[in-house]
Length: 190
Ligand code: AMP
Image (tube, rainbow, N blue to C red):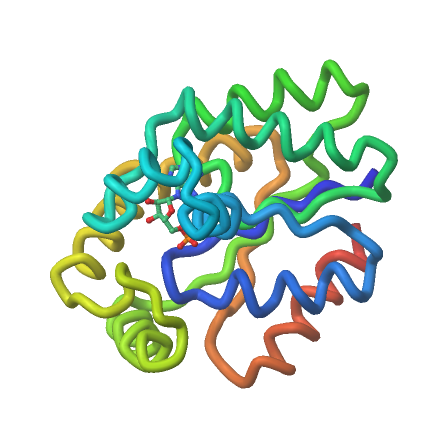
């Protein structure tokens, strides 16, 4: 299996690039943010809980997120692999993912990390807010909060994969096509 963690701050292009990677490599795209948003739309209990955190730019608690992720993976047991987009976002999630994948006799192949500086991220999120309809894109305070949560809680997850020699940095600046080519090249040389 090819299991990729697509990593990067909010607005780095994870969703856009995931779409291209799944097409090229026949993988399942698993975005925890998308699953939460679908639950909000479907007015489920999980959606209601997730919304109370998402609207403020905070992380949904680890236990809720990890359980949800596990059940999503189990829906696609026979796939060629996964793109994990927006997960893991904490050290506890990274540990839980390793343990869980081991029970399925597989593991993370690599973490591909899109690197984009903060000013560019804010510009991109402002533009995305005009089309995404996402509450958490529309408010500059919430955006700032998400970037802060990323820097404090999520960025350290990088060292978890560095310690396993699985971390690959990708320049996230440039055209969408140029960034896709960098990701393809990185995966093809694995
Ligand atoms: P995203 O679509 O990845 O930008 O995620 C949107 C929001 O969903 C985040 O700001 C969090 O509130 C929540 N979320 C998504 N993935 C996770 C995760 N792995 N852990 C905790 N919260 C998450």
